[in-house]
Figure 1 (cartoon, rainbow, N blue to C red):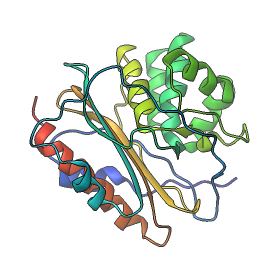
Figure 2: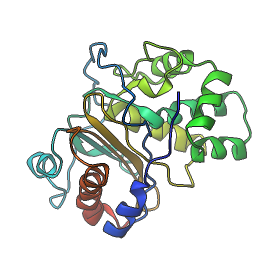
Figure 3: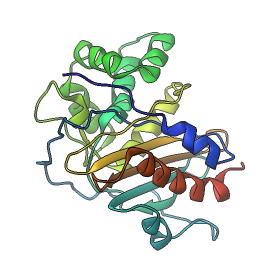
Figure 4: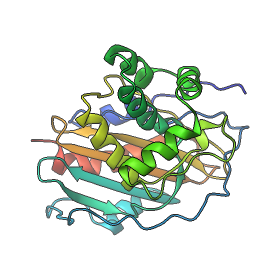
Length: 247
């Protein structure tokens, strides 16, 4: 199936925030579809209490920034607490954020760091090759079991890695494990998927010298232009980066 690279969301985000945020999202052409028949999502039990600084935007503020569905999870690696947790267990198609799980599998199998970095920085074709090489859906089921990712499920069609089902809570946990393994996306990867029936646009990365892990998942109206959808994601990132951007 033909895929094309999407317009970089990071360009929008970089103009909007003062801190460095590594952003990841997936690219799917408008004519393709993502299965909406996702399995039930169990509630993820938080391992730490939520402690939000007064300046961090509240749920209503965040929700007002994005039309459609939004989930946000911000985890403080220093205190091991979630400082923002808005609809963290809602399910979305992972799109290229599935690279987090593929990279974890690559590290487990002893793939050299430079090759893992190439995977994380690669396009859809690169992702597809690693997906097949490392076991496809077994990557997802394996890491979901190891990390307790109760809202993460492999795609119904094993060839469609982008249809892997994820939640913000699970992605944050996977990102924590990836950083613990010494792997960190050095280049920006992002894009959009539409229309499934929503326009999905996600971001995951780090702020303040890798202290905060930020995951933003959105399913916006399909009629919304990609540039506008990217601006909405950037607005969420900016709202978070202002209070969290300095270490």
